[in-house]
Image (cartoon, rainbow, N blue to C red; front, side, top):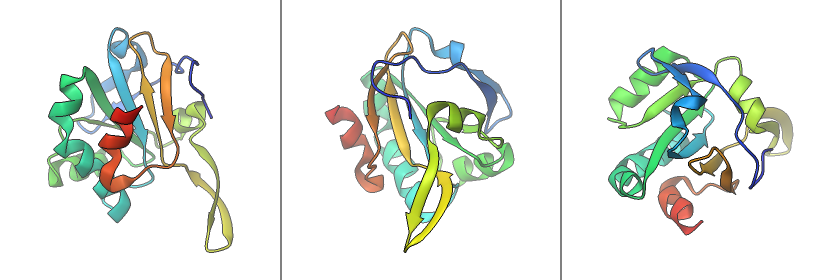
Amino acid sequence: MLEVGQKIPEFSTLDQHGNTVVSGDFIGKKIIIYFYPKDDTPGCTKEACNLKDNHELLVNQGYTVLGVSPDTVNSHHKFATKFELPFQLLADTDLTITKAFGAWGEKNNYGKKYFGLLRTTFVVDENGIIESVIKKVKTDDHTAQILKK
């Protein structure tokens, strides 16, 4: 997993509207990149809605919010529309971005081990350098975690 002080990898993908999003688009901007497992599931919805409810506060702090999951553009569009999410959701169906950030790994659920997306948030400065990494995300209070860093 990428760590504080490292530069984020270059990436290119589509958002929920089918628009191409390239990492270079965010040079000069502070970004919050949050990786989540699946659209429209309880924990992921809590996290997205917490960020939505505090979006103005995050924007006022100078942040651009990006959500990343393995879901398709169509799935992201439905999720963003249903919950009126004001930020971009990036489709990473081939896990290229997720793996480049190191947000893919072994998980353990009730004793069963498997590989999956590790819910993780990266706070990145204007130069693309990671300022903080949140690995133990509190889905219903995530904005407070981000702003504490």
